[in-house]
Image 1 (tube, helix red, strand yellow):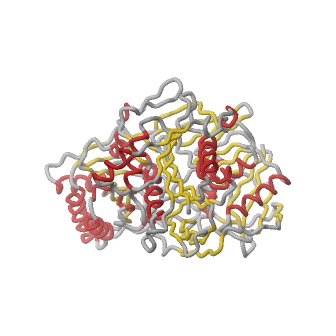
Image 2 (image 1 turned 135 degrees about the horizontal axis):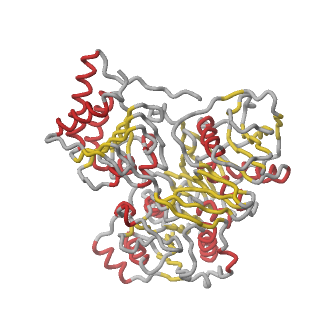
Image 3 (image 1 turned 120 degrees about the vertical axis):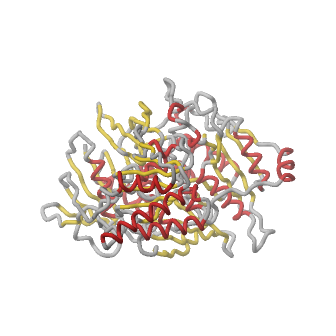
Length: 275
Length: 335
């Protein structure tokens, strides 16, 4: 049976933060505890894609075992329960020591993920291409390096083939789509997928059933990733700054849309449009 | 410090990628003792090369048996680094550049960083600047070990000139390559022709506020009528209301038109990265507190469709008076 692990990250919804919320302490930690948390968009696609892959429409009995894996504190459990409700067989949370700052340490994250993958004998790892505080965009590549597996980046679709050992993977490359038949095991890094843009929503019964199931908790010690050297990072954060913004936006106050359009054209666009 | 620029001659974005690397090289104050260009190619040996400002010490042409195998590129790069050690490797901003930078640094026990906007040598270590927290913040890092493998940040479209390098040592590197055993079949489906978004003077960008495909179709009509190209934010693309190749933002196109009209776009950091280089930004949104107004020059709080239909009337009336209403494309050519 194919064993699929989807690694995801829950992030603060940055759209809900006002300019004054972007402040940090002496350790460069931005306090986002008051902001609602959401699935990282690429990993939301990854989670939905894995659901489709695990329950092929043409052969529903040929199920794959599906695990959702996250590195988080107890707030992650709510999202894992949601995933169990929509069809994930296992929800696993790796809970690290509080002093470990993994925001800008994709190598440390990849070591934890690959230790779990090896321990559980997974054959397919799926992740999103970028997200989280660090916007590192490197975890998937580093998981592939740790496992010594091939990896495909910017994946838009993955489907089963007649052979259980292979997947048909579509990905984006420079100016084209690349379709490959690839042998498992592998790491897939999901990009913009119009085929699986959003995660499905569970019904009430699924939610109630999921409540009864347990999330598996693991520490870095249980994964035997307990040597501090393994969490050494290749870069050290020394400073954060706000992106530049334009504080002088001029609002057009016309009474009607027609007035506003006329004002916009006469005062600002006319001189900028070629005559 | 010795540096190599790693690019693929067969990619359609070679000139743009070279421009992005050139821009980043210009931010480095420290002098290089050596800058090389390492160029992968598949069939035709390149005779023209991107015009980089830094004087090139050497060009190495690396024949690649399988252009779709990053693993082959990585193995070749490992061997080249064994023969010609470099302190810094600069990779393109695309997915391949990001993959090679990350995996090569891992194999060579070096450091890597992606989407690097600036870098500099300070006290013998490399400092880099890159966006973090969904493009809302900029972070400065020190890279702890050499070689440093960097993938540069995307820049607005500005393809650089290709020239022959007559006085530079050009060396062909033909190395044995193992074929990836895990790939059974490969085929590519090329995109239809480009959108014209990258070098348009006037761009209308639709956001989630458009609400449905019908409004997007109306906006496409308005864009055609006023001589604009239509782009979109991620939710619009993910709902398949418009083609993927019209996605604007950090993970899509970075545009720099003379005028950008962002309609119904909330203005996330990731999206704003795609339009912040525009000459003049107009934001239309029903929410006056939307973050898009933080980067706009002019804002209209109102219904995007109503405002844009009125704007269309004004612009086309002006066109009729003057005998034309289409903006000529600027067609930003090579520098």
